[in-house]
Length: 487
Image (cartoon, rainbow, N blue to C red; front, top):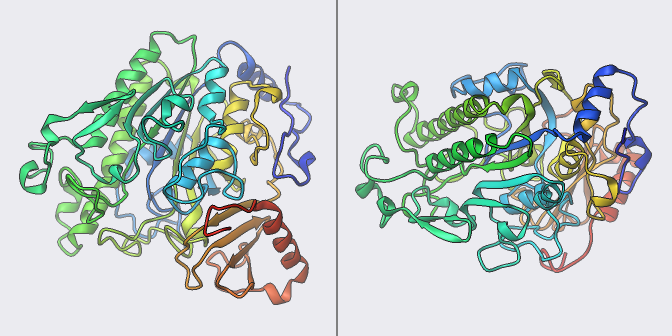
């Protein structure tokens, strides 16, 4: 039996990540299954700009969901069947770098894409590359944002056998696009030619087609296709664009377009229209997740599939939506583009029937850990992993075994929206969280998240040992380059 050792794990105390001695029959059986011919399928469902507090499954400061106004029955059911993570992180506080870390297993101190705009390099190896080499069929539906057609970063050049969706994150703002990419060709949507609110009608699907519906239709078709050969495992990345702000026939972020009013919210006349729309797209996404999970079951794939559900960064505050209206960040400070917890902490649900026991875990995990977790699920050997990864495999936690926390989780961003602004760094190690901004005169803020989850009390002056460790980690984790104005 192959035990996956720690490889390139954040450079510090690598031995802490090694799996404990295997004692339980459950772990023995599951590890054997992960390296046998019938390896689990992997379905990763990603929301776009969904806040930590937007789901009813995530409690706020008082131990319960403080609003309970946005209905997410299918995600609530998925949560009841899953291991729910309280301390999971996206890769960055905005879309592209976060997705880069998810794909490459490298945090934003090392990865290629550290802000919106750049694309992956030819040398970047993705999780799709790794799984495809291991015999998985790989597919991407939805938003990519890491490289367009004709570049080395196009999805078909980065390990995906099948692709349907947007390559450009700017184009993904248009919920009624004139075309989507199907493989390497533009799949035209005639109903959406010159789309506008006036043309599309009320509801907006009367004369036009909402891209999210097309994503779900394609996902259902591909799941049927995968079911025809159950001996070959698959990795399917379903990348929604909701509830990101967007437009109708335009890349502008002028609202939160929704194709039809969801009935539970039509009576909330005390809510601004944009907030009714925001709640509606989340409930609509919830229904679409339900459709996908039902198809997974109908295709006979659900018992052999590990399902991940997360968000690419914190709650947005765009298109007229106010992230405080539904307390979208929950008990956390900040929102999208923030290096405080509200900008980077993500809901995370993982369901693995028959292996992962449903419940709640405080195990820390970041997007940069997904590549090694997926590789472990696929039974990929150490030598087949790309070099210089920053992540670790979550497999022991998924199998119910105790696992040490990662030594640290690192984040940086070019334009954080904190008052000090400028290029910024953040690092979490244990319960400690540190922040540093280039325009902050070199000061490193330090918070104890166990006592101060909202990051209100800077205790750097009272904890010199932890402050020194934070500075060391920040210096160690960042590779200098022309990424963010020379940083």
